[in-house]
Length: 638
Image (cartoon, rainbow, N blue to C red; front, top):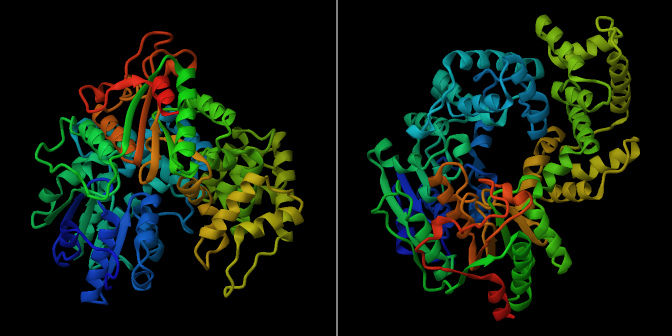
């Protein structure tokens, strides 16, 4: 690949010219051109050797999309598409059926199915709380290891063993896999089969967002390097914010110890954040006591604007919500910033306690705002969920989770009936769907209770409906599955889809790759729809600090930056990194707001303090930006 337009800095050029037979770490701060530099490295590798097998991986789908966006068309034709670690695991596991002991065909339980069908029943079988079950899944997905002492788990070995046994039987009967377990499954396959695995041999893996990987992910990569793969790890320990899945900045910090022959490349020149914004954010992150004191500080390139950074206080939570809406109006009307280029970021928002008042104030000023979490709400609505499960059955009539989902959604059929089918399936060595349909054919003679009649009616109607559906089978023509689903619902009596879901399916149709079958399309509705709305929603996007990872906008407003809200009652070091991530989303304008008193639901966030005096987070103390009266600031800008 010949670079025609982009001029690399000296730091970036060193990465691009890296020798392909040596491991490397690229420690890159926000806005330092990491993505385009990694793409340049891949291009350079293929220019030297067109047959070189190079693949780019990252942790989040959003980061994957960023890599794809930066990849020139001429290069994209010659490389593997960038993918997430989880997608990478899926591709290898699909190419090696049986290697990891997963149920086939590979069926990933989505968030609703996991929350409603999988974890409650597993928790019941184990006799533990759902929170304990969630911890068990996280521990398993990290290969029962931690990257730092403070993250060591407390799961007893006996409970771990029981969990693995119960869970493996449950997933066999229902035929599902959890997204979180896929790297763990790949690790087991690598341990057992190594170089015999199809599709697991690469000359180089370029792994972005390395700081987001947990011990299991890192072990997978270690096995790949043992098979002869060169590893290039890129990321930033200052942006490690996924403690909930046992990721930790220690992973990227210790890279040079794990791979003692590795080269080390810092990217320190920021091309994104305004100078005042970067100075403020750098002050916050430099307070991390675990951070390497010798880590080279970021500097702004000459093209970066000065930027605007302000810390604004308001008398109460209502005034703060109004102030945030007025700041949004100031940005759009006085500075000409499109609404889609403004983020409002929040540390917490249980039941919309923080976002609700802000949305109402935005609406009163005629400012459009969007809720990227609308996908979760849409797909959790009963009618929409029935549609999804029914089209799962169109793709595979013996999809056990889909049948269980439809039963759960049917009034009068409780968990006891579903459990009775499960127990018989487990005893007979059948899948849930096989036993359900066998019992249906036998008139549910083994289960004469009242729910059996409702179940029989449901199954009969679904089977009849499935007989009416004609699935497009032209392999040479790209099927717009969302459009087809909408028409099918209308023509087969399910009824019209609501406008929000129709719009979402239409947008997904535009993003989907060609030659995708129906089953894979339905599986992508939730994750891809979420990505689309987080990245490109109309209006001002209101979201959590965590969700903003990977986004870049002209202006960001971080609300409720008060002590005990941020840092919350979690790992204080990660809370600092989380705030740093939010602050560095903004290119030109960064406003942080807080209320001196709170009443109502927001007063109970963090440490409850209804009506009492509050202070801004101590993470800003002594920094380059001092707090000032928010309303006076707004009046002065008008």
